[in-house]
Amino acid sequence: MSVSLPTSNGFENIDPEQIKTFKDFLISYNKLSELCFNDCITDFTSRSIRNTEDKCTSNCLEKFLKVNQRISQRFQEFQILANENAMAASQKLGQPFQI
Amino acid sequence: MAQATEAQKIQLLQDLEIEMMADMFNRLTTSCHRKCIPPVYNDSEIAKGEAVCIDRCVAKFLDIHERIGKKLGQLSMQDENLLKK
Image 1 (spheres, rainbow over the protein chains, first blue to last red):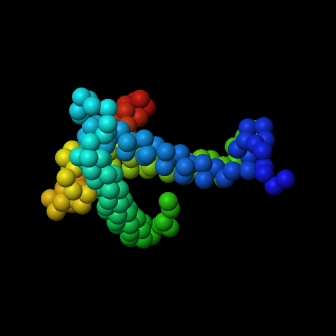
Image 2 (spheres, each protein chain N blue to C red):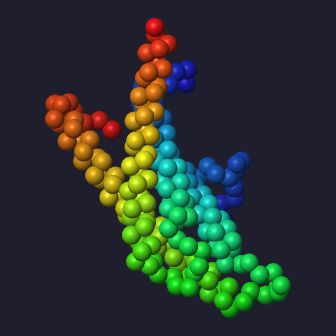
Image 3 (cartoon, each protein chain N blue to C red):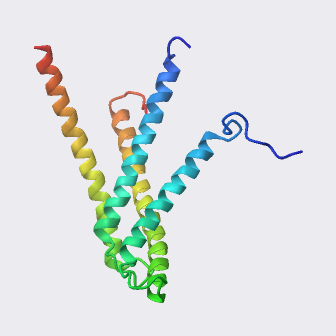
């Protein structure tokens, strides 16, 4: 059978990098649902989710992803700039650049 | 595995730095989202003003991060010098 059953702790054949990525995804998923729930759902006079609440939640989700994307873009730009500055500074001093 | 080799130490430090960066980035994201995006979701697009706010927020956050790093470095240097005396 090709189905691999979990051995002793079950994580031996999974790449730790993959686990980290999955963990980060789950953390942001939880954060996102907390944020959108708190911002969009305020009325508890009815059990069902209203259309406005549904719309608000999906807008919240989409906007959250866009905001995250923009922030990481800016962050990267600053990172590159800081790296270049460090490189230039160490070259000026005549020392090899080290991370 | 009695002692960590030099390479292992460097690896550990690098991992720590990456982890610290990730933590800082998460905090940055949370702060700037909270400060720039009002909790009213009539639209899924980022508004012009919000976009400008985010850009400034990221720049300012990193600026402050750097300043505090420098200040902390100075202070801990002072402390070390005091301890040596």
